[in-house]
Length: 396
Image (tube, rainbow, N blue to C red; front, side, top):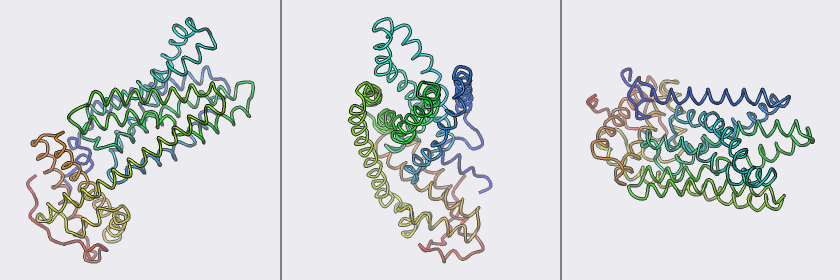
């Protein structure tokens, strides 16, 4: 275990080598976020601090909800942070500049002040903002394709970039409301609408792009069409929501019901994908019983979230935090192994990559298994009854 970097293996990167491109992306995104905040502070008036506080307030809960969707095979934290920072930085600053220029030099000269604002909100902003948010998903598809294993991953990454964007955008809305004629009452109305009633608006829009990216990452044909349709779907939903504000409460209600229906469909897709993954655990992991890496009881344990939690608690009881971490890594490595088989069967990876990745994951499973079975406690006391069989260590 001392020679392994479990997180690097699970992330599919070289041990001890953080991605230079990822670091650069985080730095650039953070700088853009700070510039946007600086502009808000300078031009936003007295409402900046209030707007900042209200915008940040629901974010931890919203992020927790998104991460709960992906508990069976969670994405690398660094990639999720990068997506959030991109939304809060590059996408927001880019949209701030491009939306302003589009209104000043395109929609206002063509349609006048009032109609120009409507067309900017209903057409210009959705095109610009969804393109900027979707760009990071295309980056992840290009550089981290093997981390996007299905619909859930595409939606999770899309939601993270959109939550970062929405948080920063809400600051400006709250500032404008507080500094406007309505003052505090106007701020209350905007907070209820954006912070409580429709906090998943932007994640829902960008999820369409996430679906396209997920399809492209896991299929050999139709990739370009999926990416285009996904991005257009995001723009359409975003444009419908923005345009509905011109039709009062009835317009908002109609579009809200449509969006809520789409949200339910996405949740069903995520649930069905999780069930399919559970079935594949029972399909692929039995192939490895002869290696001693899994037993029939282990496969049953790996197939449900409650049993996985029981296993981690048992490992902590037997060997403390180190053993619990080893159990968690073992569970994730086993799940990654199943997803590797899934991608191989779909024909999106070649035999060489499959063999190399398979060896890494089997090696990690062996050493993490040894870590929680070799503790001073009694391994036989495990609720699912793990096998104590320990084959010779695989070649490293």
